[in-house]
Length: 208
Image 1 (cartoon, rainbow, N blue to C red):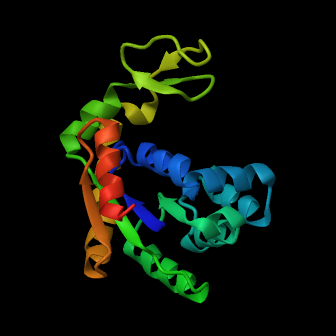
Image 2: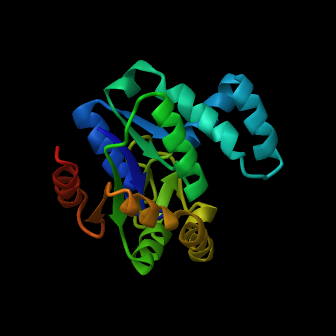
């Protein structure tokens, strides 16, 4: 299983990725996690990435691609991998294809978790996050069930911010749907259902 995961912020991609990782033991490669880990480890790429992040700028494609290549070379990624949050645009997708080709690796599919914008706004704006451990739950949860920490609403979970994130997704990332559709490897599931129902469809569409 070597797949790219697509879908708007809040579509539930991360949840489905985690279920695939738990069942099949593949590597979940999130560019956000990679950047944070590289910065923390103060690796060469991490130091460079931090300069851009501290300046409030996007980390250049070549640095992100470098981090992804390093991660793909690790043992667990040889079993299979799920790329989550990368590529973010068609230029990155073309670069990824070239790098995978050099490694002798082909993508098995691009999985789109499809959820309507209005559902995502409602879903994310009702989400609360634990200040201590990062656990997420609904708006009716004021104390974290995992560590008893305080639950709060992140700035990027407020409706006006969510809409900006969705606008960015529509302009930059949605074209990937057409790109992977043109390559004949796009599969789509309806993400506006209970998690386990979506997961059944994910496995069916991926032939697992």
